[in-house]
Image 1 (tube, rainbow, N blue to C red):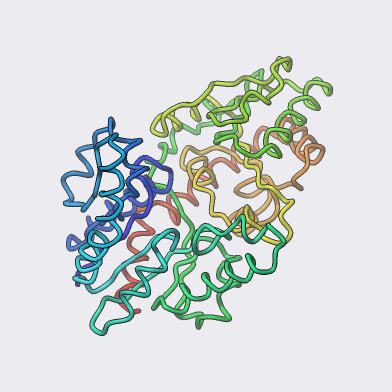
Image 2 (tube, helix red, strand yellow; image 1 turned 135 degrees about the vertical axis):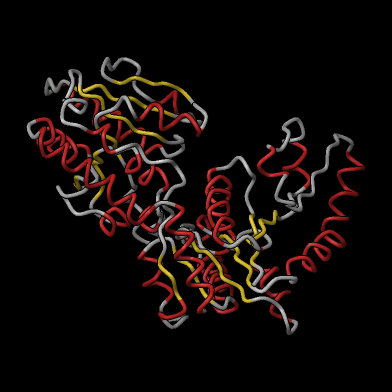
Length: 393
């Protein structure tokens, strides 16, 4: 049985790293597995021309089409080649397997599905839906309020779901959403998990986890949502006004980092750091924050995400303060393996007060989160589950 995973994201993106990690675990237990890269659009590839691919990608024979040029004519010719020839050759290679896994049918994903299913004898297709955007990156269409755009987004998503042999849903809300299009025995619920090596349980001894002053609360992210920045600013401000001995550490970059209130003495910005160094910074924190935007009643964009950072927090044995909706509500039980609260600063403030007064409970919640990660959400465990699912599908 030959399996191919079609990666439609750049290798350095969060989604790219996630799929590479899952692929590595899958290839350990099923060597006849190959990671295949969708040819980048030439404009994207040119922007990355000065970055060499890591050895870990080269050794697996990925097919990657990269155009290294700044000449406009060459760009046009490369684009012409990609559309008329490159895609066809790529498609032929994709059909030479028994099972094809497509991560999130954006971009050319629907076209791949149509072409593969149009001819007999192709592989079984297992499509991963990992958030509410659905097919084609249609989040903006769904939130536009324009009937034609909403109808197009809905049609494209339903097309991809129906053309796929099975669906792999990263969030429970997506399982409920697609059950009208596929029988439940053709839908696998599998959260993102993480390929991060979990911290040894011994590191979470009572002594090493003693609550420090200031109590360090960390948030890791890419700051593109003004709602997130405003939420963290307000939470830090309320904590300062209430004399809570808390230091908020904001890890990551993004276009809105300048919107953080630099006058708040309890708000520390580290700036962007490599993804591989995130867990190192987590080791020096006492609590991790997770924010999901509750103001998407129509698209529920954030509620349908299986946040990778959530599992990275768990892997490092961090107690998490998370919203009580969406995937956190599916994964966590309040005061057992996380702390849940309504997503507004005042509710998080009250939760922080409770946390500061309950050191022993924070320690136990951290242990429970780490054990849950080890038992259910490592990529090694998820790869075994995925392989079992593919074999019986």
